[in-house]
Image (cartoon, rainbow, N blue to C red; front, side):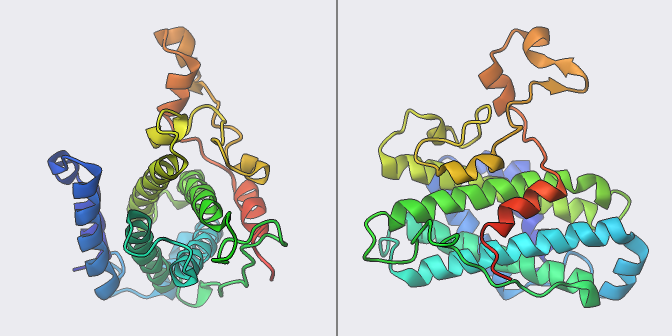
Length: 277
């Protein structure tokens, strides 16, 4: 099975329509994740050269994919370290969710490296403590579990907005469709992490439990340093039309209906908080 077939199955309306609960969805999520990890053939690019793609795509597309690869390196290493840390409750829902997301992020790394060929960047060295602000992998830290969940939410929300922000640079290339498919998978990661945080915090009525961002609220318990991830999400205008004025819906509802892109600089600034070199 190619990754593109895996993503097509995971994001298809038919699949989602069959899911009667989050438990059912993540059972399927896990099954597909195993297939993707075991058979990580790039999205229809197995017979083409990564260098040839890079030469035909232009510098903007290459830079976009290099940014995406850096973010995927960050997420893949984060989830791997989280699973090895002993912080996640063994056998619990959080461990299961992190395991499946970890497989997806590793598959994304493999795909982007294959597509970029010689243009693939090496993984930076990451510091998930952000210079000592966090201690997420320490099982003796009472706040470690909450920090693991908060960092996961910030990383996933950044990924969703960053992929959308790079879409214009990928238009006209063969990476446009798979990049948007990855964007869709990252959005599902973000939603599940947000709900997981709500369950753990026992605050099921707050905006975290909704699975999406409201205005530019980072959500309860999220460190102030993550605010850059959410700035701009309060946008109410789409296609030059203020949708609150046009529809009468609340600002909260309108903001929840759209993911707002972040530009390259913002995505790099967020990632740089956790990059040593």
